Structures are given as structure tokens and as C-alpha cells.
Image 1 (cartoon, rainbow, N blue to C red):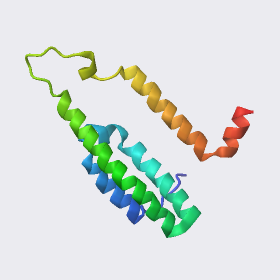
Image 2 (tube, rainbow, N blue to C red):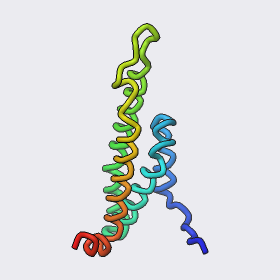
Image 3 (tube, one colour):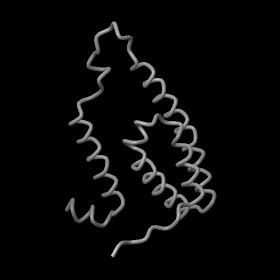
Image 4 (cartoon, rainbow, N blue to C red):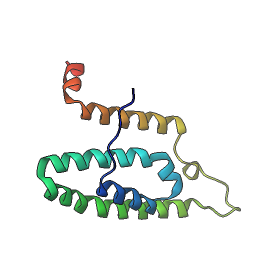
Length: 124
């Protein structure tokens, strides 16, 4: 039996639309994680302070989205090296194995943060 997920909120839909500012390859790799993180932050803000909390969340999120997307676009442009120059290690990006480990660690921390009781029991 599968759990049925509620329809996305208007904030989640706007966030998903704003994610289009990021380059496609970044959205493909991290888009689901970014939307899940925003959904968790949105739920916490709404529970803690209602619509004012959601407004504060957007005041922090909007500049971060625009700044992060701009930085990613500039990084993508700078990686386009001329054909005459040999590719450097920095142009190839970090080690794929290291990226996988870091992604797994971020996921583990997010899951532990979602269930604080389990985290306390696991740490003890």
C-alpha cells in the first residue's frame, strides 16, 4: 500500500517554476532534493508562524534562488573552454565518487533532521 502525497502548495509550484533558472543538468541532479528541502522548510515555517513564516521563508529563498542560479550559469559558461586548451581537472569537475558520498551524507543528515527522536536514540 503506497502513501498518497498531498497536492503541492502554491509555494511549492512557484518554487518548482523558479528552479528553471538553474541549468538543466543541475536541475536533473539536484532538483528533487532541492524541492524536498523547500517543502520541508515551507511546512516548518507554516506550522511555526503561519503565513508570516511562509513570507519570511520566501524573503530568504528568492534571493538565494536568483543568486545560486546566476552563479551556476556563470560557472557553466566558464567551463566551456576553447578547443585549443587542454581540459584541466577543475574543468572536469570533482571526483564522481566524492560527489556521491557528499550527496549521500546530505540525504542522511536531512533524514536524521526529519526524525529527531530516532536521531537521539541512534546517537545514544
